[in-house]
Length: 143
Image 1 (spheres, rainbow, N blue to C red):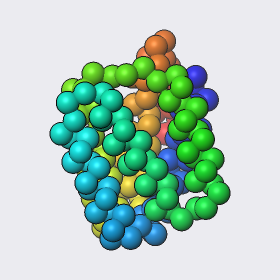
Image 2: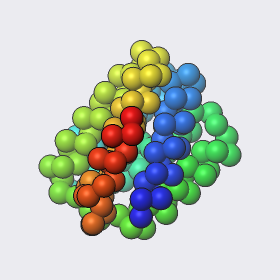
Image 3: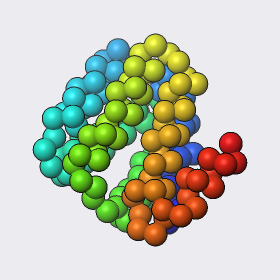
Image 4: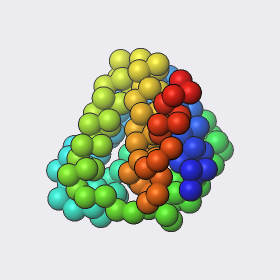
């Protein structure tokens, strides 16, 4: 299961970096809208739908063409193994979206990629059963 999260980490950092360079004002406004929709969600299903749209839009905003298709395929594979988290945990996770959109708006690629990396690293601890030992901790100690 780590391979799915690791693959997502690679793509997430790449699309985030390029979204910082290429996102339009309209795309940033739509990311804001989706971020607020997630914040107001009261159940996992509504949150997940907005979250999925958010990710797809960041990918599209990157302008990476067919690489975005591979990113979307990776997300789809990952979601096949998804264990829904409580809405409170998802709302806490949405804080990453808030800071990510702010970094995209200011064009701070380093900050945006760091936020994306931290966001995905959390999955090693929360998304899959049995990954609490080793996943993100091992990665964090490597730099």
